[in-house]
Length: 279
Length: 259
Ligand SMILES: Nc1ncnc2c1ncn2[C@@H]1O[C@H](COP(=O)(O)OP(=O)(O)OP(=O)(O)O)[C@@H](O)[C@H]1O
Ligand SMILES: [Mg+2]
Image (cartoon, rainbow over all chains, first blue to last red; front, side, top):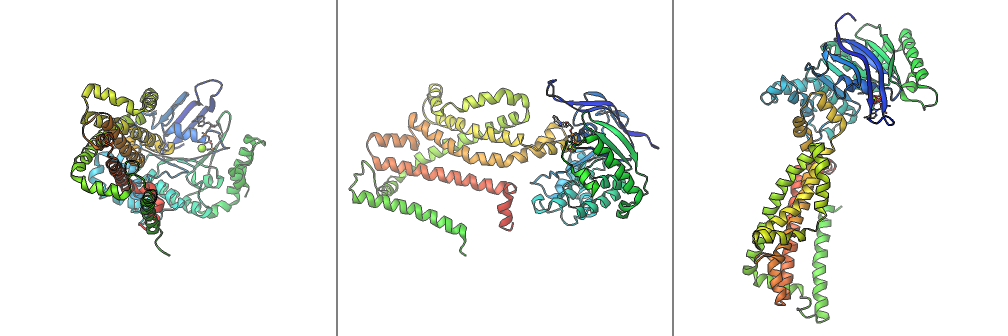
């Protein structure tokens, strides 16, 4: 990488469960370096530890062995602003969409101290501008139950971005959406990334999504979870949907697909990743 | 089509009135003595005639119920938050609470009488004891049902435990809390009346005891009627409050009403 590393995993292992006979080694001997402002996608069969890496980097779970550094310091030492979004948008049902989006501003310094003073002016405009960017102009005053699943997912992206995070963690955020909404959100996501350049880790089952959005794609295998391949996506930005039909893009996704099929074995039923990659 | 909500209320009212009419008719038909079962009309006459004497008793019962209820709710909220917030407190206190709640609350009345004498204090305390438990359980449940993903979002933002409690846990627990209020007020009322029947010289419960000792059966029934009306009214008030405050938890009906 040209720039300094922003996220570093060094020989990290994660074991869930205390008792030896019931414990699961979700991650083993994992090494990963992500440069500042880079965009990396994590792909791999179900249960290989993608979400575990995300939780580790987000400081939600500790490493059983090894080291996790974020912004050059061991995790937790440096107050890094982190944004996170999941497949499930998890809005707070008693708050309007705008207030949901502003939630991180209420929690995260330095915004936290100014929240009361600015929530009706500067912060409100900030949330509304983001909502407009993802196609939700005028929906700030609605409540979550008044929006569709795709709209909620857009709002969830806004919530992940509103406090200008240095690190953005996305766990299949487009997974539950229809194909057209998903492709629209890819374009929006790319725009947002180009404009703000946060460091992004995107977990996805969709190889085209990974190829369209990421600078790098890391492929993982399960039991024990490990990174077995790390490829650069060499296409220039901004990328368009046409790129997906480019022969060299197809070659890349084909190769990744074969890797995943190989590591997941044949005895498991087909996952979406392979079905979609084949389509 | 007719407004079905209104129709249902009308049917419900008609049913209650019909019940009284049938009761009245059967008593007249079989010449039931008012010492055995007074007719509704006799009960209403008694209510009317004895109203000046009944009113202070009604106020007393309402007073002990409300004071006990408010105390129980405040204590219940505090215990509920502690239990819902801290895993340790949950593990330590929950078995104790379950054991405590399975004691028939009437059994504590003599203990209160022992320490505080008969009268207002044991009635308030019994009402308080009765109303604590539903509040504790519901508040703790509300706090414990935060979605793990939401908690992850908050933790990734480095939210403190208090931030999570204040912004997510407590609002989430609100519908549970308000649902528990209508249960708690009913129980407080029961506790109050029980205590009055056992150890008091005031209140509806006490009045009914005295009336039954002198075989004034219509007066006993008049007391019962007052209790029924109060019980329903208290429940209705807190159901209404619940609906108002936590509309978001019942969003479908609200949405259907075009809110
Ligand atoms: N809280 C937990 N307790 C015990 N085991 C867990 C826990 N979370 C995950 N695991 C296990 O760790 C392994 C990796 O899980 P992880 O959620 O990271 O997979 P994933 O790659 O995100 O899968 P998917 O693509 O299905 O989301 C799995 O075998 C899973 O069963
Ligand atoms: Mg996952």
